[in-house]
Image 1: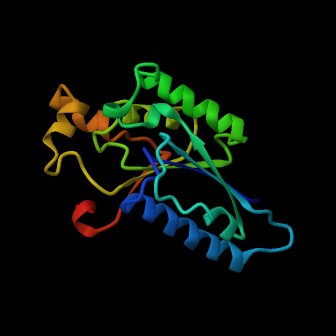
Image 2: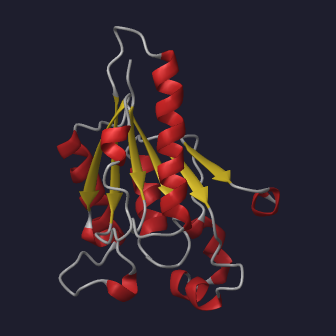
Length: 189
């Protein structure tokens, strides 16, 4: 049965994470295409992002044969420094906006994997706990960390946590349906 994949990132501007997302989609499409049977339909993939997408390869969706790709703008995913005052300002608002956007795509918790890039980078203070709320709602979550606020980004880290004694619990939620991925051994360590 085809799966739904919800990819979450702050933006789709030219850069490292955007290229990682594109490469992941091409790799997944290649695997799905080689394993496809007549009864399988395409996987539905939606990328949920804050609104910026300069440098996104527009033809990617047409190039993918086994994936139906949709881009969905969620203003609350934007960097806090770029958010307008009318955008949602709480963790609960962001989690609600994501759940509603998932529902509009037909992405239910039992059939959708939520893959979040750099959730705890310190660019959006609400995202780490919004992710935890999605997991509480039953969504399986994969958190792929490319950068850490703790690594040479002290202002980002301070933006995320006011009490360092609970930082790990806030930034890196734990549950049976939350898993982590890193790109290299240093980050994994």
